[in-house]
Length: 359
Image (cartoon, rainbow, N blue to C red; front, side):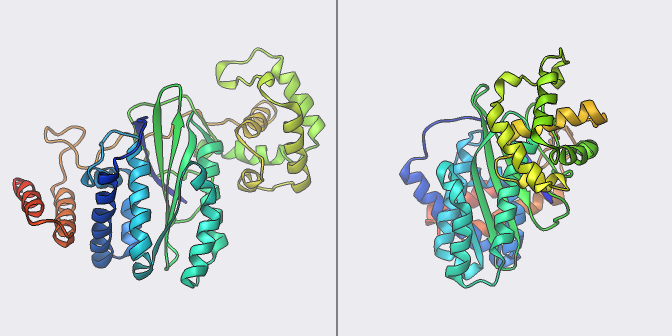
């Protein structure tokens, strides 16, 4: 599995004005038609899974470049656009913000049934649920997911765009997934994660956490009372900050119920443990802490954020501009604008701005 990247954005409240959103739907529809027509639906999914391209796409649609609302609004515009043209393109969208995100499995099944597409709905539903579980439970970085969009094509390609919220810092973090290179949902799923700062995290999907994943799955098959007793002992110890686990924050009855479920199912891999209903961040942290203390299986605390830029900088920082990449971006945008049904004055002004670039 490849997660293509992450963006960090300040939380903005409110919604896009109706007049703007309606135009965003129209323009996104034309851009989707242009790119899908020339490069294919799968290429569009790959572009949307790139956090920089997605951000630029949102800016092209006229949304605030640094707003968390860009994610939900752009995904909403894409979903609305695909209601009209998705069948012709073989490209579909499910999910959304808040309660709508929880309807993603049903929407996937309904789309496949309604469109009579020969696809395995359960495969997509699993990918949708597991990508959310990874970013919310296996990678604990302080952001609670509240938005989840799942896009897929009739060829079987898919992408996920989801966003989490940190109410204390008032920042949001966006996660991008691409399903074209499925390898492992729980081992180094990130390809490029970008944001302005790094946090203290609990990263069970890092390569360095491989032993912890194995031993956490092993412990989950033990009798609940044994595990509860061990966790109570640990809660009385004075541990370093990175090992902190306050038992008072855990509901003993709830934890025992979940551990009884894992004991009965006896998952043989961390991915299967993660997929068990009810297994959340606190369960994973408890089991991982025990695996560290018993088996010395270290869990990575490094935030998988990598600083990167779309085209580099004119002054050579962080690296010189790659003209071929920049030309490609401009060419794609030119073609999209050329295909878009814009008014003559808007079209003329758009090309005038593009024409000011010298290569």
